[in-house]
Structures are given as structure tokens and as C-alpha cells.
Image (cartoon, rainbow, N blue to C red; front, side):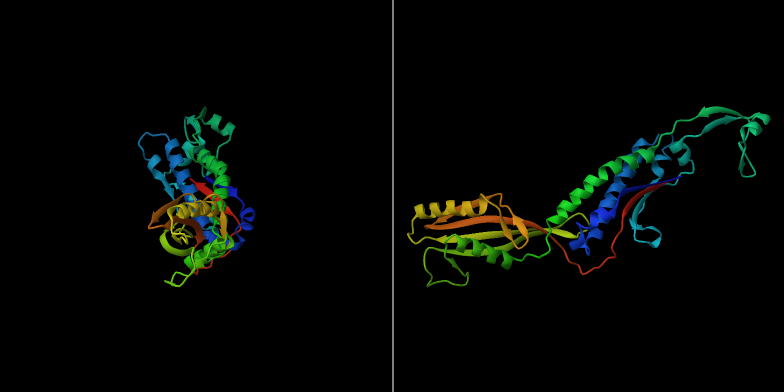
Length: 297
């Protein structure tokens, strides 16, 4: 007995994935594997236990191309020879065999041989129920995956890109932005910008994306050299970066926390910029046409 459920047509996903064609197999495989793990776990929990042989017989196979084509599948199966009898239920018979020479006996043949039917056993439908539950959840999980991918953007953002964009925002707001290598001879008030990488974490879905955190330091040198002027500048920085989102390349950036420190009438501003971007590993994959979740006994 085999169960095959087309849980999500990849044609529906393909348009949203066009800019990620080289990367989405990693995401899709990880999502499909996660669904398979959920089905496998659920099927085990629904399996009746006598000797635990049947419950321990469930196996999850790796994602692969189905029959060498372009359809990617993950397979859940039981190695127990009686699994299909528990899954589907079976007739209860007495008085002899219901098959001869590979053929099933009809009702008249059974009656002539004294074979009686005592009804059917319960069909536990461990696999069918598990696959059905996964199918209901799969579309929403696909949408979540797409939402994550939509935030990755087509452009890799560097610390230099961030520094340049912050300089543009500050200049448009009337601040005098000075290159970090300039140490003297600049006009005050002045703002220096420093952007350094803080962390980069590969995402769970096959490592196709990374979550990047860059730390920003703004150094504001007051022309009046007073703490009051620094406090006024702090409010302006909050209005520029904390109270409204801003764009860097094709990314929409929102700052959650901004910190200030004033030393010797110099204002220091600290905040983190977090974003997700695709990791280009230089690996190309064939396009997929659909995703299928399968289970078999």
C-alpha cells in the first residue's frame, strides 16, 4: 500500500522564487524534510503498540528526485510486513484460507469450503491521517518560507554599502558627514560613521540564507561643545533611524534599539542593523516543477 499526496504545486511557488532559482532547492529540501519528520513522528504516535515492532518500523528517507525526474520527494515507510493490515484494517476470517493459487476466493467458493467472515478489524490509518495533517499545514509553511526568501533581496549588502547609505541619510538631514580617516581640519558639527560586522548566522533551511548583524557607531562632535547640543542631536538621530524605517539597497531596515553616550561633549550613537540575505555558493540546480510528500507501506 502506498500513499502519495501532492501537497503543493511548485508552479505556484515558482514565480515568487524566480530571483532565487539557484538557491531555493536548499530551502525547499529542508522544508520538505521537516514535513517528512513531522509525518514520521505523527505516524509513530498513532501506531498501536503491542510489541513496539510496528511503531519502531517507521523510516524517513532523504529528499530525492522521484524516478530521476524533477519532482523532489521525501518518503516515509514502514518495514513491518503487517503494517498495511493495521493501516487499512483487514477481514476477520475462520475456517481456512481466502486465496488459492494466488487468486482470491469468491463468496460461493468460501461458503463451500466452510470459510466464514467475521467482519473487519479497525483501520488505524496512521499514515493517512499523518499525511493529511501535514498537507493541511504545508501551504502555510511554504508561505512562511517565501516570506523569508522575499526578505533576502537580490543584492549582497556590505558594510561599505551601509556606511554610504547612512551618510546619505545624514547629509540629507543637514549633518556634516566626515570620512573616518579624517582626523583634523574638519568643520563642526561633524558626524563620523563606523560600521563593523557583528555576526552572521546561516539559516536552518539548508544554509541558503544568512542572518547578518552589523554594528553601527555614529560619533557626533558638537560645534558648541555642550552636552545640551549633544542631547538635541540625539533626538534628531532617533527621528532619522529609530522612529522610521529606511532602505539600504533593496532591503527595508527597521531599527529596534538605539543607545547613546556622551563623553566630553561628544555624542556616541550605537545601533545594530539586521537583515537576511541569500548566500551564493556558486551552485546551480535544475528548476523544480512540484513538491510531493509521499508515504508508503
